[in-house]
Amino acid sequence: MRELRLGINIDHVATIRNARGGAHPDPLRAAKIAEAAGADGLTAHLREDRRHISDYDMTRLTAELTIPLNFEMAATDEMLEIALSHKPHASCLVPEKREERTTEGGLDVAGGHNVLQSYVTSLKEAGIRVSLFIEPDPKQMEAAARLSADIVELHVGAYCDTTDSMKRQSELERIIQAAALAEEMGLECHAGHGLTYDTVGPVAAIPTIVELNIGHFLIGEAIFVGLETTILKMRRLMNEARSQVVA
Ligand code: PXP
Image 1 (spheres, rainbow, N blue to C red):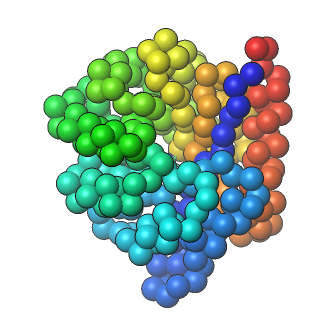
Image 2 (tube, rainbow, N blue to C red):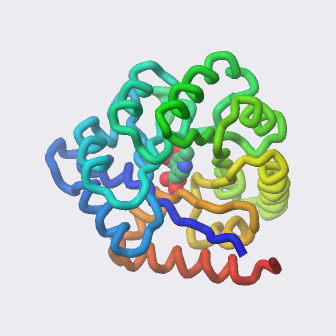
Image 3 (cartoon, rainbow, N blue to C red):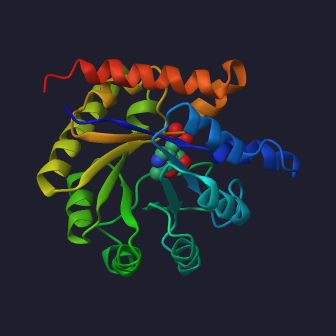
């Protein structure tokens, strides 16, 4: 059975730090705790408005982490330059709007094909793996394959956020089909956005998904029981769901 990696998104440690403008709590410290708790990777999103992760955080993360860093970035020249200077393990291209509270939907790869190609090519030429954060939509996946992305990360927010069980099931079906299509197209498949202890199981049980990136819920839960405990529980739930999969 294929391994399922857990990537921890530490943006919201920086959100709390920035609420007071000082140095505490430090996202690098959170990253090191995640590393020690067995996380397979870290994710950080340097936004255009620097509302959470800062340029200095990026410098420290790339210098001090021993597990892979997934650098989330908008497809802009500024972010490309930063990615090329830090050379993270992977860059995940995401849509970014100043007024949004979080990354609200997937990247329109099908619509933005011409604009995105040069970013994908430059990152790949620098040896950075390229991931595209997209809706579980065949049209977007075909466009991602045409761009020669290495990875698609499926935005699972619609599945996680709904409280309607019928809608949740139909969103899960879309994710299952998209993950199967990724496999057919030779794209590595990741998933993320909004995952919690309650929603992670069915996604972790999809055999062609090899990485889950989880942030907000884990950082919030860590306030009550600590980051290590929270990560270990998420990992256990992922492993339990994965072990039920018939290979
Ligand atoms: N993956 C991507 C590409 C994201 O943009 C985010 C949110 O920043 C996540 C994963 C993690 O989502 P959440 O913080 O809701 O767990």
